[in-house]
Structures are given as structure tokens and as C-alpha cells.
Length: 125
Image (cartoon, rainbow, N blue to C red; front, side):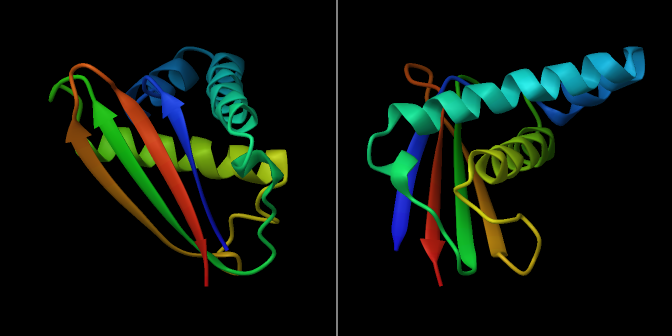
């Protein structure tokens, strides 16, 4: 089984998430929840993906298309991975995001000035 969904725009970077948490613990948590809602809304918008439930181990592919080259690769991918995997578990697409259920996550960052987005693909092993 395999499924893909797209998040329009971009998610916050790790630096933004850490900054919010350093300013106020509850602020960082609130910001993460808002970002998870963006992911959940993107899942719900895809009629095929929103019905998928993975019970076996998956490989996760996260392709980030940024509007420019200003943000660091690690800041983009680490925050995106955390937010996306937590949202997939929260929504029920994945049972858990532990190594028992997620074998590998790959991240790529590209530039697309006209259409920044994040494409997420899950492939069951």
C-alpha cells in the first residue's frame, strides 16, 4: 500500500520552533499544534489519502519545495518530519512513529518559487 498527500506552503523551521519554546513553553507547544493542524487539514483535503491506515512498517518520503534558498536544510527537514509524523499518528494514519512502524524517513529540499509545498509519501514495506 502507498499514499501521497501535499501540504501547500511550508511549515515552520526548527529554529522557529525552538525560538517559540524558549520564549514560552506553552507558546512552543501551541505553535506545534497549529502546524499539526495544517498537516491534518492537508490529509483531510486528499480524499484518497485520508482513508488510508498503515498497520505495518512504512518508509516515509518528505520532499520540501521552498520558495527560496534562505532556510537551512536541517532546520526545514527536522521540524517538518517531527510535525508531519506526529500529525499522521494523531490522525490515525500511523499507529505510532517509533522505529517499529517507521523504518526510514528520507528528506529532500528543492526550490519552487511559484509553488512552495511539501509532498509526503508513505510506502508500506
